[in-house]
Image (tube, each protein chain N blue to C red):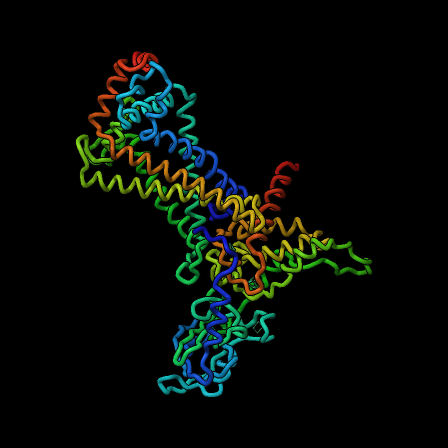
Length: 277
Length: 281
Ligand code: SF4
Ligand code: SF4
Ligand code: FES
């Protein structure tokens, strides 16, 4: 088998690239992505002190309105200020595909035995593989629907728009523009599972990567790094859940009103300038 | 909440069970039997009267003396492997109550302290069964040979005294040297699975014992001579990267060898070796 011998010939390099891509770029992107998305909840605080650029940052704005405005600001910034965005995206997609394909090949070499050896570390081993399998399905759904515009997979058919970032996101996750539908609930649940599993996958992978590369050798070092990864994972988990909470709590109609006023330049001069372009 | 402990179970609970054991009780022993390689297996249960201090081997001897199942059916004596009877040779390793361990050091007072208590005996699953509880551990030794787990001293003339070993190094290596090639770490490892065909042994996962032995001999002043050859094997298919960090190995190792530290240490060695090789012409 040609593919087999290719894998064997470059065994070490592929294994290490598999480990590396999980951290850079995928893990780093995950941190940035969840930070941005959780601004749906913390965005109002982020608007404070931005002066008259964002009148929504002023008093009288609800938490979610502030979040919608700040999230829109972030999304606009990413779309207009980040150089070579498509190149970055392609790198990311290829890295994810690479990590996933090799991950499945590697995972298939193992046979879980948690029923006999019920150690926590053994469960983490098993969950790492399970979260990989389910996580990649979730990522595919997430990217296909919200980035590639495969709206036939979105209940209610909402297409995500980066000019109406929060409202279209909320509608896609809730199943309709107006309120929660049963299908929307399933999508929200999928997001909850997907985000939770992927954050675990990253935090646990970061822990094992330190063993793989030989950074943490002693039992004590592995423990210390374990707690550090746990703390990072817990932080990301909170951000992931906050993002989702924001998305399901936002009323798409109200969010659209906020975004509309941003696009029409009623809010803030800098955003008005961008909307004119 | 997070558990990184390299050991399992509580010694105090085991001691309490031993203290509670009832002398002269009758226990049930279920054995997974197999007539020979490739044959189907079946379960047979025996009733055995045990006294204080009985271990699995003495129970198997009693069964051999009177191989009659609880149903009253006469059968053949159960076949098992053993050597030292003091947990230093590793030959008697089997799966007892679902977990791998040495049978010679497995006391009935701890595993079946009460009247009518049952224990189960199965052969290891990662090695081909020869018969009943006896398995063929050839692959384990083959894998030690793959990483040249020895010190190269054979020659045609006297080479003189070897280099001095630092006491600190000795301390690390002493622990590693206690490996008795029992196979517990392999039986419990989700990445180490049965390979019937020896042709696959050189690409399937090598196992924690071999990784740890490679570290032992790489850190030996004379053993170092083969360091690069060992690392090359460990970088290849079935090498250290195939470990999935389930860390079962370290928990079941009867000699408490820090296998996960060995895995990380070899991980570091191959990282550096790989980088060096990359930048070399
Ligand atoms: S840490 Fe590696 S060698 Fe040890 S049981 Fe897990 S996968 Fe096997
Ligand atoms: S490392 Fe431990 S469990 Fe593995 S073969 Fe050696 S003594 Fe047995
Ligand atoms: S007979 Fe040697 S370890 Fe049990």
